[in-house]
Image 1: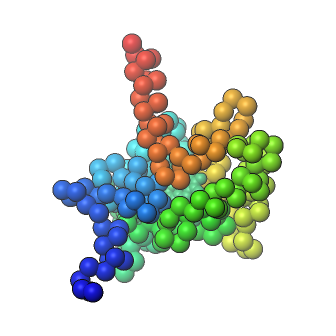
Image 2: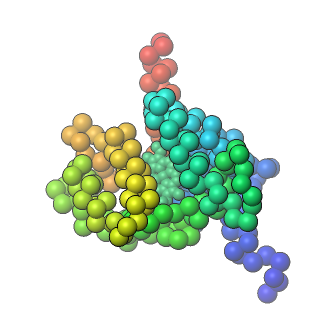
Amino acid sequence: MALSKLPTETQNEGTDHGKFIANEQNVLQKHVAFFDRNHDGLVYPWETFQGFRAIGCGLILSTVSALLINLALSKKTRPGKSFSLLFPIEVKNINKAKHGSDSGVYDSEGRFVPSKFEEIFSKHARTNGNAFTSDELMAMLKANREPKDYKGWVAAWTEWKILYVLCKDEHGLLHKETIRGVYDGSLFDHMEKEKASAKKNAVV
Ligand code: HEM
Ligand SMILES: [Ca+2]
């Protein structure tokens, strides 16, 4: 076998005329690619901010999230590279930014693990089966906690809490299909379109 094209070297390097294309297998790349607003494979803090604004988050949440996410993840996704004051996140290495105390639905390569996805509902969505109440979500977070992994606890709590606040229905339920969409990032596109059309209707 020719060594010049090892799959591990090429699998995350998709580009089309200079545009970064997320790897189909690495679903975590798709989760993050929404925030790479100009598709160059890097998410800068202002792009994280723009992405949060595009899905309807307020100024304060968008600003604080952009600063914290880029400060926390930039170095991890730039192995071997020196510190950058612009705090870019490299989408192709996003699996290196995984933290502890997560659900395990993304594996260490950023792939989506269907059995883990089903497991979070069979174990924790006790009332409805296909949706979480707020209490069930908190119970899941607690169950996922690894001892003394305080950073992981905060990261997981923040991810799930923001998702819950943004996407719960009128009965306070967070649905399975919504959660599926957050894993592959399609939820963000959907929210952006909804927000844009709501704005358009408000103007007309
Ligand atoms: C409103 C925006 C966002 C929401 C609601 C959100 C929500 C989530 C959720 C629910 C998970 C799954 C955690 C688990 O399986 O336990 C997750 C994982 C992850 N997210 Fe986001 N996310 C958002 C934005 C971002 C951004 C901007 C980045 C980075 C640029 C990012 C990077 C990650 C990473 C690296 C993981 C994997 C964590 C792990 O499995 O250890 N997310 N996110
Ligand atoms: Ca970018």
